Length: 307
Image 1 (cartoon, rainbow, N blue to C red):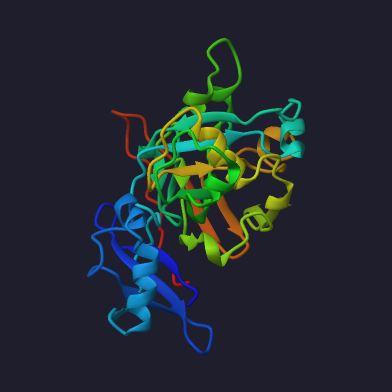
Image 2: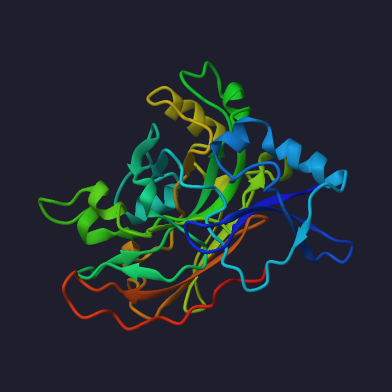
């Protein structure tokens, strides 16, 4: 039975749910609160996806309404949020770099994770805030010093859509430019809307796209990744312990503002991201207020998104 997992409710109070399509192709939501407190590493490591499927088939899970409910990130705050840089040759070129011979790895703080439809803050002094649609790998079991790429396949629980929002002035320019500074800003990693199990989608052949104010920006396919999902899990496991619930962002294709072809994100802009089979995100941007200054104008965003 094809399923996908979501977390519904206010930030910090999300409830776990599993989604299946009915005979008419309409998403139906079912609570998995009887099986787990959250969609997290413990749930994934204990065979939660399989248990949820069996419970659905036996009619054990109660139906719930998602109408008006906020969709949170589909995995509770990960222990590690691992990112891969310049993993599409065309994006490396537009960034002024040669395609890497080995994966470029960096970390983002897990407190940057946000919901897929949450209003998104632009830092108070930012002038070069950029979007990046990325395939996210959700780790399903512990991975350390894996001996082969085949072993890595078994560690992938599923996939999701991610936006690796990046402040390019902080990241690159000047003597103090550092990737950590440009990639660690609050709410700079919207995830979701869903976690789709790895056995229900081919992570190596998914179209991924982005738009700004309905204008196309990125349009590529994960088949163009320099290093595919399993290769990345294997590689990263040689340098750090990957735990269930950790997420690896696999890199973004060409078409970002850093290319010089498009303006950077401005207050009031709407950025949308989509990966085939994994759903669509939407963020409306506003200028965050510096501490001690007058609050920024409120942004009207719906409490949730019916999908």
